[in-house]
Length: 267
Image 1 (cartoon, rainbow, N blue to C red):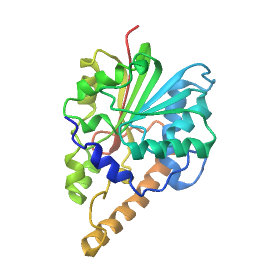
Image 2: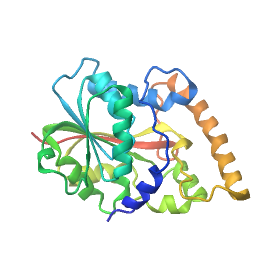
Image 3: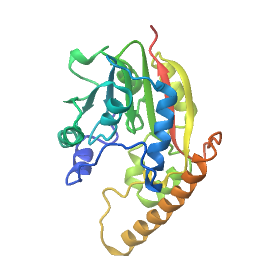
């Protein structure tokens, strides 16, 4: 079962500004999360270009990552999402970036056959946790991989402080998440028949992942919640400054904002 649904995402993207692509060398404090992901992807993919290799992003609505993967690593890029509005925004990001790529509007449980088994790398950011049967979701992700291909799954850590804050600020958004810790995410990948390379908590509490989406933007309650998330966002930037300079520091279950799982489809 999809705990969010197409209507939720169409409403979320409706009226949103088209974002620019990820810039991994932007030194500003607000860009610390992207720099941290960049470090992770360079560790995963290396520094040499990957001409001829194909990458698919699942849940690619308004994706800032697709141009990044093309520019930084030379992947041939495709995005898939079931929100028509989100897909149009993803196309706009690509066009504004001057990057060629394909955006497919479809449900990843019933995609065009031509996409199955076609990709060397599949990535997702905040998708798998919206489905009751996580293993079935990961199995659908893996169906896009070539034998030996890599799957990168990123989810918010709703088991830690970030999840507790999300529950407090906006319970309806919290409720569309399956609450998964590192062990549960790893188990879902293994149940899907994948070889797990690593499954780790990632990034110290980035309160920027907390969402006020769907709340009425007026009244005292909104003002308090908006002010609180703004203040916590500044604390997150300070945490990011420290983490960037302490590269061996690893956040645990309570203190991390995300979980990353890297797995391989057996050859």
